[in-house]
Every structure is written in C-alpha cells, then in structure tokens.
Amino acid sequence: MAYTINAAECTACGSCEAECPNEAICLKKGVYWIDPAKCKECEGTYDTPHCADLCPVGACVPLAA
Image 1: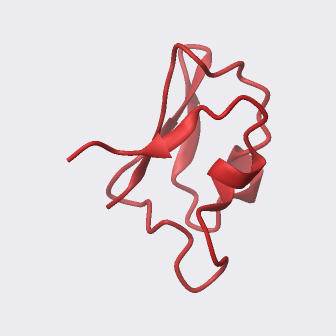
Image 2: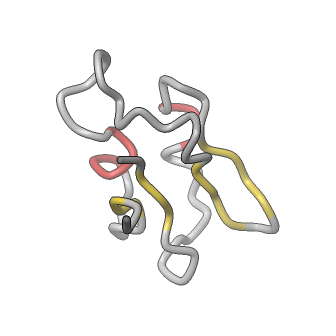
C-alpha cells in the first residue's frame, strides 16, 4: 500500500518532499502529491512512513484501497 496527501489538509509546508527516500513526493498546483508507484512506505529506510511522521497537520495518510 502507498501513502497519499490529503489536499484539503496540506499546507504545502514542504517538510515531506526532501525527506522522502524514494523521491515520491512533488509539488503540483500548490499542493504536495505522492506518486503511488514510487511510494514504498519508507520500507528499508524508516520504521514507519516518514512523511506521516513529519507532517505537522496529518495530511499524509494511507492510500485507500
């Protein structure tokens, strides 16, 4: 499963983009977006999805199946 960013919650602070080990996060139309094909939930790098740990407003959430 991958993570996604809830656009309604995202403040575009940028704390997640530089920290993503898979370079899955980018800015599009003023909001950050996670490419689900690249998101590996930080497996092998962090114990938990790092974007979710870093997000100050809780906008990084698991992608609904």
